[in-house]
Image (cartoon, rainbow, N blue to C red; front, side, top):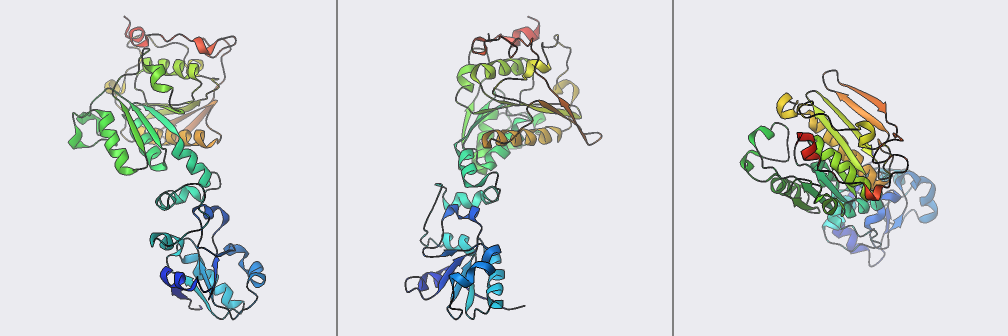
Amino acid sequence: MTEVREITPDDVAAVLPAGAAVVIDVREPHELGGGRIPGALTIPRAELEQRVPAAVPDRARPVVLYCSRGSRSLAAARTMTSLGYGDVCSMAGGFAAWTKAGLPVDGVAGGLSAEQRERYSRHILLPEVGEDGQKQLLAAKILCVGAGGLGSPASLYLAAAGVGTGGLVDDDVVDASNLQRQVVHTTDRIGMPKVESAARTLTALNPDVTVTGHKTRLTSDNALELIAPYDVIVDGADNFATRYLLNDVALRLGKPVVHASVFRFEGQLTVFPAAGAPCYRCLFPEPPPPGAAPSCQEAGVLGVLPGVLGVLQATEALKLVLGMPTLAGRLLIWDATRSRFRELMLRRDPRCPTCGEGVDRSSIPLVDYAAFCAGT
């Protein structure tokens, strides 16, 4: 295998002013949002053999190749050597090393910093996301109702993905019994408000994220005000009262809800779209009688189960922000004992009291479901 000479970013910067070498960027077009070395030609690695003879007709002229981190440019240099170019080298560390060294960059697009381009590089590589999609995520506002079993993994992955503003609604404090599944909290935070504990973890994970904690329970008095500023709602509630209230408020405000619930060894997931059909009441028209459905506190739950469902919730929330197809109209059921997913189709109920035919969603009444579900 042909040995390729590597030079440092400082070496490349030294030859640029005099034009002593042709500098070629062999990255793909979707990688160029963070800019390029001033004066560099752009020829993707896959097109090098076809395009470089016309771009650099003098095969004796020195050529410097670079890519994102230095590996593809080594392979590209071998290709150029096989084409008869006699003085070809690769820039060690690629464009990442160039920006880390604080050297000048041309054509910066999209407003992402060098640190953000590094952090979200795997997103930017995806055609479905790219630089524009990452900017959408950074501008997005997602509210997690509940900072417990579902809200913990969902909020962690949303923060890691760069969702710029994350809201948390929870009035509880961290308890030792939470730690078997609520992974956003730690043992030394027992007794601390969950929204405060979660905010510490999320901002430590990603300083790009602004976390707003709402230490309160979602009620008919505060729900409209709490939910209105957010783009997507992640339903991590652990009780029917909150789920029904959340459904009604989201319909009034035109907000999509990513719903999940867990029980023992089983979980379910769907998306209730901003358009409102089908909605939670199409699936469960009325709250169950008091005491008919035991909670996880009473029946138990396998600790990893909320992790599976919470990560799936984060996935659907990200897809909503990016404008990708979601689970809307389908209910995904996960049976952990059999390691099996099942899918059910959901249909709008034309007689649904909150999204049915002729219903004025802007005037859906907000009922005190806590009192209703308690039988008071």
